[in-house]
Structure formats: structure tokens, C-alpha cells
Length: 112
Image (cartoon, rainbow, N blue to C red):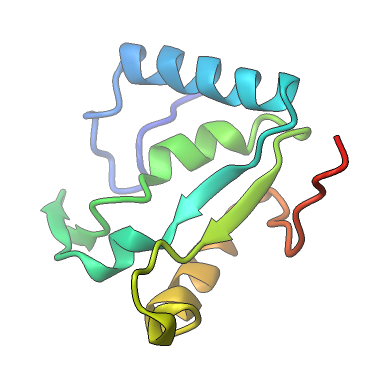
């Protein structure tokens, strides 16, 4: 399976793939949520393969996460101001998450 971004960028190489898998598998083993970090929506976009993208979250990583049905995923606001907890950037991030097949948790289970 090709884990490069939909824009065709090849910057997500074999080493990124292997590191991603180790992170995801460790998170699953330890019942740790993977966070789609909202801080990236507040940063300037980068231009890759004729398209503007977030610096992060990186689509290629989340495509790997899609292949792990037991992965726990949340959206984090990564904010330092209360007004940013659910602002337009976070709403955009929620829309971004909808393009993946995993389910984003709306609550964190702390009992494990």
C-alpha cells in the first residue's frame, strides 16, 4: 500500500512509515489515544505538489492509522487561549478528520 499523501508527495518515506507503525502499535498496546493536533491548523500552510496543506497533521501518517482498526483517535485543540478551544480552526480539523475511515473518539476512557 502506498502511504504517500493524496497529493503524491514522496516525503513520507520507508523510515517514516516504520516509525509511524511503531508509534501506532505502541499506542494500541498501551491504550493511548493518537491525537490529531489542532495546532497545525493555526500555522501557515505549506505548498506541496501544487496544493496547500497543513504543516501538520500529516495526511500520510493518518492513512497508516486507518489500517489499524483498534487505534484510538482524538482531536486535540492544542490551544493556549480559551477562545480557541472550539474555534474555526478546530471545526476545520473536524472536517479534515472526516476524510479518514477511522472513528474519532469524542470521549476519553481513562479506566484502562
